[in-house]
Image (cartoon, rainbow, N blue to C red; front, top):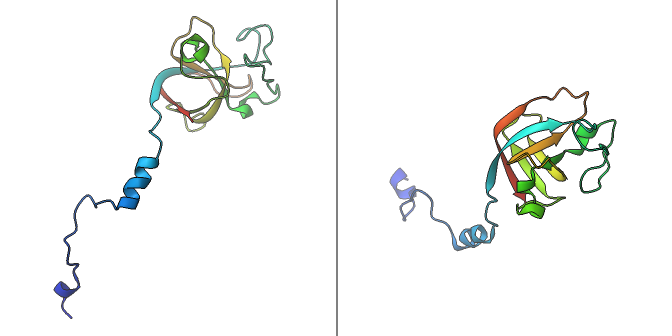
Length: 144
């Protein structure tokens, strides 16, 4: 048997042509969620960085004082929250990238930042956690 005889009759094309089933499957996928570029910082649940009730978030959730970081909760600036015309609401899940391997990932919106902040998120951590800093060009995407 010659090698030429084993070649398919129809020439291969690149990129590969989609089958109808694959095309239907791709069309059924939701549109990708747009990302928003923000600045990010961290905050501790204490009166100097919050209000007079540091262990209660703006949506009424209670923070575990022994390990606040385990919640994976964030505060968003008011311009990002739906109450002030933004797209996010309490309880929304956000995918955050551009900070660090440890801090990137999934968070839940539970708090609001001071009105002087714009296009920013604040990650809840404990005062004994060794996470400090401010980051620019952080990408967030709301998961549906």
